[in-house]
Each structure stands twice: as structure tokens, then as C-alpha cells.
Amino acid sequence: MSAKILVVDDEKDILELVSIILAEEHITVLKAQDGLTALELARKDKPDLILLDIMMPEIDGWEVLKILKIEEETKDIPVAMLTCKTETRDKVLGIQEGAADYITKPFAPEDLIMRVRDILSKKG
Ligand SMILES: [Mg+2]
Image (cartoon, rainbow, N blue to C red):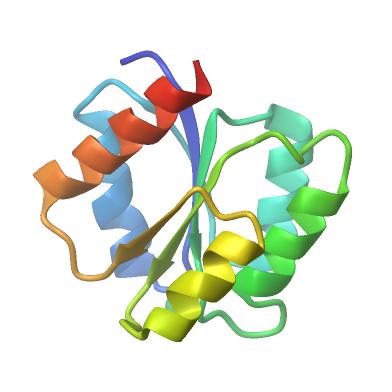
């Protein structure tokens, strides 16, 4: 799968884990540990998909998603939210805000890859 994915998570262990899983699929991985860096990389590198953590200090995932969806140069990049929360309320909110998917941590590597493939194939 030749794709470029931006992974955003303030927890370094999760960031590394997701990166390793994706790299094994020959996906190019860009990493950000905070919202501002995520926005910069999204504008500069135009990834095919963004995996975005919700719970982050300063600018959280919802804020980042909102900005991504407003800006012309990033609005068409699919975004899948990564979160520990399992409440349906968050899921509904995520879809309303324009998230392509909602992935609950912890996840099995094969599940993550399946979701990623699915989103990328819909993008065409
Ligand atoms: Mg977090």
C-alpha cells in the first residue's frame, strides 16, 4: 500500500507503535506529538490520511479536526480519530465534525490496518 499517513498522538509509545504497524505495510509515516505540529505537517506534506488522537494538551484532536476541515488545503484529507473513550456521544460528534472513522485504543494491529485500507480505498 503506497500511502503517506500522518499519525498524531501526545503519547510517544502509541505514536511509535502505530508508526511501526504502518511502516510494516510500507506506508510512509509522518509523526506529530501535538496539534500545532500536526497542522503544520498536514499543510506542508498533504498526507493521504491522518490518524488523530483526541485527548492532547493545549489543542485537542477536536480542535485540530475543526481547523483541518475549515482550511482549503487540508479539508479533503480523511481523518480517523484515535481515542481511549468509548462513548457513543463522541462517535456521533466525530462524524458530525467530519471524521472519516473512529478507532478506539487499544486496537489490534490487523484491525488498524483494515480500517486504514478501508478509508484509503473509499478516498479512491
Ligand atoms: Mg492522548
